[in-house]
Image 1 (cartoon, rainbow, N blue to C red):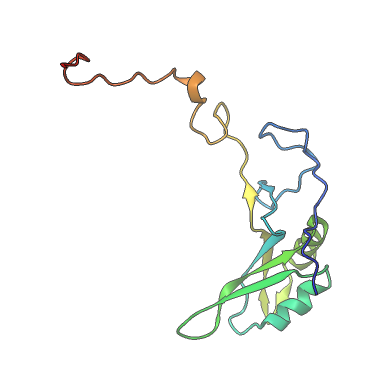
Image 2: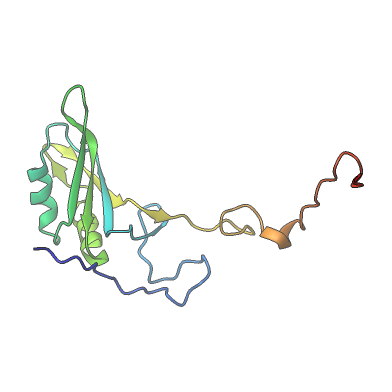
Length: 155
């Protein structure tokens, strides 16, 4: 029976409470910071040949570490692969090795691309965490609307 305990990667930025990435964080090809999903480190593989099978991907990505889960979406009408797959690894080290090793390789005569599926975008300059300003301090507190009768109540 499989263990139900979750592998936990060491957090290089546990002390970094701000949204500013540190030098030790893993980056995607576009510069965003890779983040872990609830279960593990998921990479997205694009440009997958429509006739590729799960065994083809297991064989290719299995050499980089233990594959925790592999998902290929199929077209309902044709039954062929839609062109992408999600591969889950238990550790960041294995996922990074898979991206570095498989990105740009050929699978059934098509060059595939691999990168982290979940990322945290870089923070916007001068904005809050979600890019909406600074909460209560930014533009000031919002004034409450007045009732139509001026606030007086009749009893």
